[in-house]
Amino acid sequence: LAVEAPIVVGIDLVTIGSISESLAEFGDRFLERIFTEEEIRYCRSRERGAALESFAARFAAKEATIKALGIVDVGLDWRSIEVVRERNGACKLSLKGVAAEAARAARAGSLSLSLSHAGDYAIAVVVGRQELEERA
Amino acid sequence: MTESIRDILRQQGRLAVDVAALSDDADLYQAGMTSHATVNVMLALEQAFDVEFPDRMLRRSVFESIASMRAALEELRGGVRLAG
Image (cartoon, rainbow over all chains, first blue to last red; front, side, top):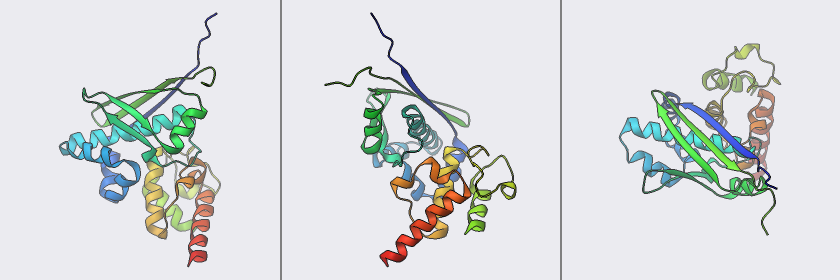
């Protein structure tokens, strides 16, 4: 008898302009609080407009992950959720610390990430399938 | 402290309602505060009160109302005094 495993999903939409404003207002303090060194290095390697799109999409990815895992009220360092870019340009999530523990507790298995941006908006969707039983 | 928090909410909260119309216990997320606006509010509070929110405080319930932010700031500033 096949049993459908529940799906977890999270989505977040960010305006790129608002990320630009945060950078103007708080500078590196904003970046270093939210993004890992590798995320900052990659986004900064792009020209300014594309860099802002990348920062905005990564911010959305972190919030979408928090929603997917149902951890909006868990004290969490945003840098414990990292967007890792693979050689083919695809992006995936790498979770550490509290975020990784939350994913295990939610039995969320591996999470899939999709990012997009158009005009002044960046969006991220995170989907995972809950495991029905904890692995031995 | 409450007035300073309200000023920061006016500048950074991007709320759909007038901050003056909100009670100290009003739910700011119901009033339209986004996750990104929460980050800006947090950074502005850190700047204004010379504190740093530790990871355990980086959660929705700490920033959901003026009263909850004040409680967190009082705890942080109390900690600074004790440490000093």
